[in-house]
Length: 382
Ligand SMILES: *Cc1c(COP(=O)(O)O)cnc(C)c1O
Image (cartoon, rainbow, N blue to C red; front, side, top):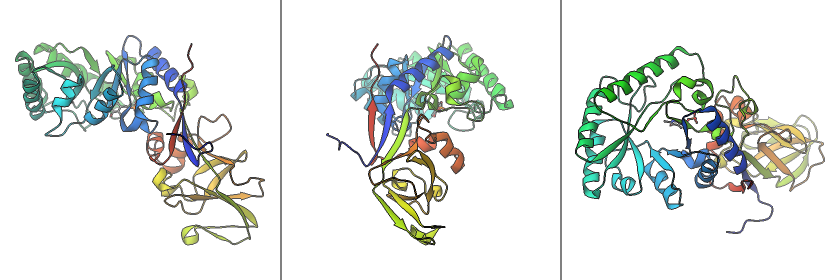
């Protein structure tokens, strides 16, 4: 599909940054391998281009939430190991098995369903067992763990599955030193030891996300699952800027002014006039709204760069557009507005947006909507 030469709005994704961010993660991971987490359309960056760049940077595994996401990666020709961890009863296990996708199972019903599918497919499923080491989310509780392990080992003995992984996820990895972190490492070690005592021989044991990859070497085990750092955003933003971790933000969200108009003092701007001009000024109209991932909560808060200056969204963010008060700046329709990016030109970062809105950078990038074109800066071939 051809793109207009001057798009209305675009998310520019720097695949070279993604490649080098994964290489930085790989260096930090020591002897552990890197799983690049590309769920949710690669945190908004585009799942397939992100996955390819991550593999070029040294990722040997790709992580996704759904089997559909895993199948889309296979359909695009990615041959790396893939783990899909969100399954529901009646899941399309057969498709995961035939596409060589590892799946996570956290309960005995999952072992039963995946075994039945493996019998029909006439080949074993690859299964990672998930234990709840303290996040209180998707893993099997410590109480349920022995029965889950035994069900999996029985299915393995019958040839229905290969128990390829044992894994868990942190609650507080972004607060290094939080007492739950060490406690979770210990619970995980105990869960792995129990599984091994019962006869499990997993290829990979994995616990660390991006934050733990950088801050907790004892959590690296055989594989680290890195998401946010792949995209160049800091997993520990209170402590480290991305550059301090060898990371570079990969996404720049840009749009072009559609209209610039002079208005008098006291002029009400956008729905319910939540912004009133305080002097004669220029208003600028930007073609991004809450349907594109600019939260309505960014009303009178969201920072941007236009005409070389920081400006703040003026008035309510609408579904498709928002306004800026540009003062007397000599900007015109067609000029570029940078919403966030790596900061090279003085534009805000995704982290700045997260702070302004009381959220995390994960949400800022992953909510950029499908109407915003993704354009790619390709990997530099060396
Ligand atoms: C999303 C996700 C990750 C990646 O976490 P980051 O903090 O982005 O590195 C790792 N593991 C699981 C289970 C996830 O859901």
